[in-house]
Length: 168
Image (cartoon, rainbow, N blue to C red; front, top):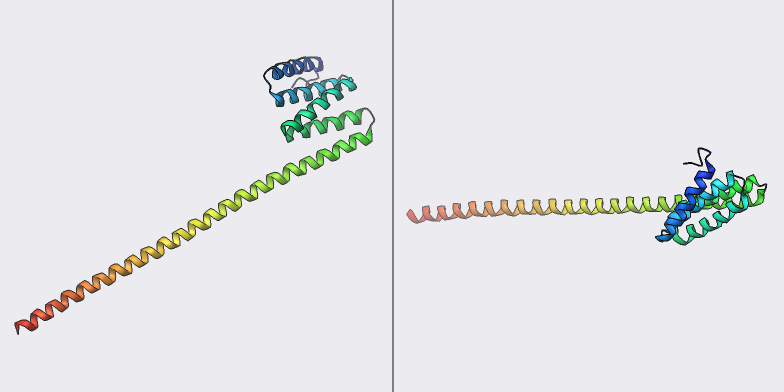
């Protein structure tokens, strides 16, 4: 990223181009990230008012499109901006908001993981129950076949005995 390399003017120019092009195709998330990048460049160039205006736009977009990652990045950038400008109260407020967002994202991910594990567990339990039923059915069929075989042998034996008695 050009901001990381200290090339803030170039980063700002590319960010503004990205905002323009993304706006033309109604790609709100990219517009939001463009504003965030522009805010970072302007912050580093000590144009704090302009940086704050871009952050306002980025935060509005993040909330409208419900992009928590963008929203967290904007809150962090706000905190850094206000820390630089000596607005400790505002910096702390944005850090607290960032912490709440991170907790929210973490809790959402945890709930999704728990739900997925519970679904897997329930599916496994159903498979186990089905396997038990299949085993019981197989055992019942084996018993029926054994009884039928025994009945067949008994019938043949009884028939042979009757035949033998008839011959005597």
